[in-house]
Image (cartoon, rainbow, N blue to C red; front, side):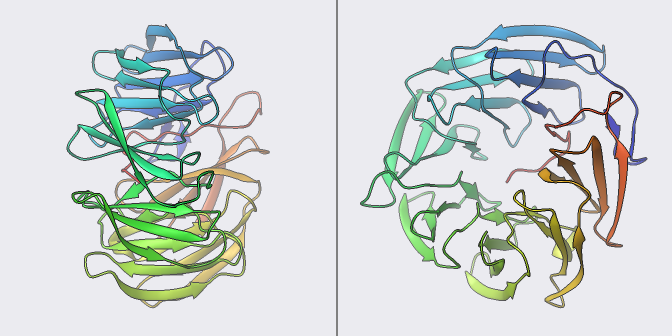
Length: 329
């Protein structure tokens, strides 16, 4: 456990097994972590500092996502298929089904009923109704077997975005009419679209060329067209959409970008190979974990400064990462 204000480890949990994925509910009362090989999930009470429940799962929980309220979490398997829905408050399973398409991270809608997912095998966007436990799919392409990214959404939930990494397209789907409203072409290998916590901008990134197109949501007007010197597929957005960190999980390079002046204000390379990045709720700090070093990077977005500190006692990597104040993608 890391104190986000002090930037240091304050408590170490002895897990029952290696944690492949983890989520933390808001204000950090509940930690949920899973293991793929064992097909297991554990609830850990951070206040009591003890395990409160353990479950053997019917699927391999390769992906784990928390909802917008912090009350639920969903585990899915992008290889064998299946879905498990957890209640973080009751610390139990709300639903479990093996009859679910193979998919990566799902996307919870703010209405707390619908869960969106990408089905690469059928080339479609699906939506699961939690109450009825039924799902329907909208075809995004006439050709099945497309490599689709996990869906993202606008802050108000009216727009859903999915990248087709086979055809190099990003689809903008209207959540109400369930039709494709617009398509974007930014490069040959688009990353998962990212929308800012404030909902003002949509970032469309090409993982090969480093091109990033910033779109003003609502009017869908292009705000900036930027090309970084390296491939990118991840972004941490700073306060007021000002200083943003663009980086990749495929290479150690990063860029600090001033979204107001539309210019790069800093570049460099991390000490290790990044696995994931999360931004704090106040937009001041980003956290980066790595696959080859036993450290966590604390990135000051406003001053473009990076500080590393050890996150394990035995020097072992790699890491999963979850923030108790993390925002919806």
